[in-house]
Amino acid sequence: MGDVLAGIHATWEFDADSLLIRFERGIRTPRLLQSLRERRVPHAALSSVTLTPGKRGTVVLRAVPRPGADPLLEAAAGQLKDGCDPYRLVLPAERETLAEYYADELRARLGPEAGEPADRFLVAAPAAPMRFKAYDGRADFDGDRISFRWFWTGASSEKWKAGDQTFPVAELSGVEWRSPEAFEGYLRLVPRGPAPVDPAAGPGVGQVSAAPGAGLLTGTAPSARPTAARPARADQDPAAVIFGLGYGPVHESLPFAASVLESVRRKQSMPVATAAALVGAGRRDPADIAERIRHLGELHQAGLVTDDEFSAKKAQLLAEL
Image (cartoon, rainbow, N blue to C red; front, side, top):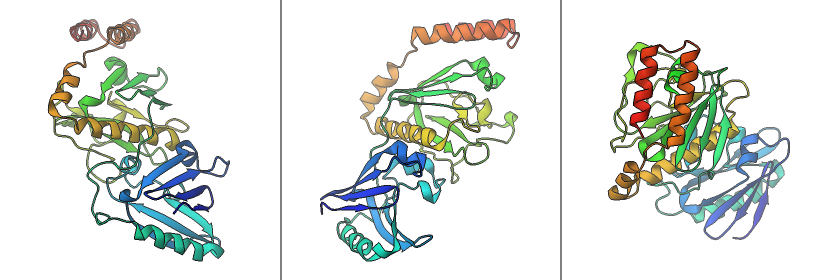
């Protein structure tokens, strides 16, 4: 089509095989949309197009993505507020006729698979490297590994005893994201293989389930590292960071989760021989081991771990070299 339709907070550019959505940088634009900047959505990623009345003399044109087509929405798992929905274009009510014209044009370009879930991601995830500050640590993702570095002021004693963590994408089956705008938000990595929840930890933040709001992508390949019972509480799980007021906001933590989720899915789709080679090559970085031993020593000196715990954990870390 080649046309452009400008709305509130965003502009849609209609190309022959895709829809390019550009988000404004103004102070009234939700920060998530500002951080995304623009998104190219292939027509093959859409299931339908709707036009509905909006608030205060507006209409809302929405391109509805197919389930499984967009890693951002898969990670969000229905937790985004309408104002942060990247597929909504809000227009003045007097432009309803024009909006209906473009809605019909888009509908005409939807393929025969529009009503089916997508078998792969069709919309690109935000690109790594990425990082953000959570309440109890800093999260980094370089495209291949996720690292959690704990803060003295927020991390639980369980996380300090475990030390800073690094997780190769090849060892994960998915990611759970609970919005920081909800009570007890978190980002939690899901290892491959069975991951039973530790009942001794009791119910609480981050109970592992496939319920709405979990943003869970399940895998089937076995993990390269031993699988232990996962704590029921995200604040005690070394594979999770928790959010707080101003820590892990949506516009930082959700694109991070989507980027990790896309990388996990891509690794899962690799040939078995290639994936096995990546797992076999995932030995610990000596510098990372040295850093974790240093943290362990600080905990030992502070009296947070016993002599036996220090010796056992140090031996375990050295064995990973």
